Amino acid sequence: IEYIRSYYYNKLEFTRFSSSVGKYVGFTEYGVRNAAAWNKDASELSAMKAQKEAVCLHNVPVYYSNA
Image 1 (tube, rainbow, N blue to C red):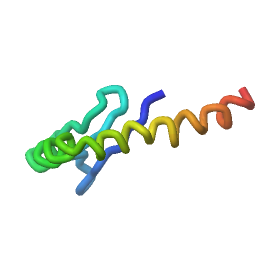
Image 2 (image 1 turned 90 degrees about the vertical axis):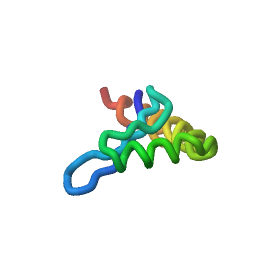
Image 3 (image 1 turned 120 degrees about the vertical axis):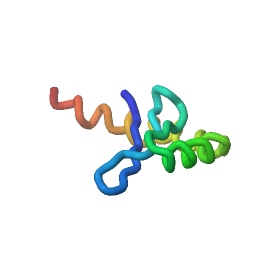
Image 4 (image 1 turned 180 degrees about the vertical axis):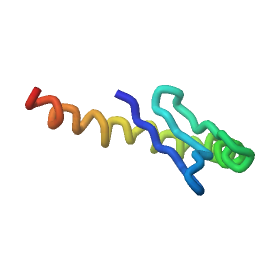
C-alpha cells in the first residue's frame, strides 16, 4: 500500500509526496522549491506519513472483503 499526494497546475504535476519515499519530490522549478520548504517541516512530513495509516490501511479491509 502506498499513499501518494500529487499537486498539479495546468495538467502538469509539480510536486508529489509518496509514502514509499517518505518526502516531497519536485518536478518543476516551482515544485522543487515547494518540496524543499515542505521537507524542512518535520510536522508536515509526519502528517503526510500518518495519512497512509489513516486513509489507506483503514480502507484495505473494505475493498478486499468482497474478493
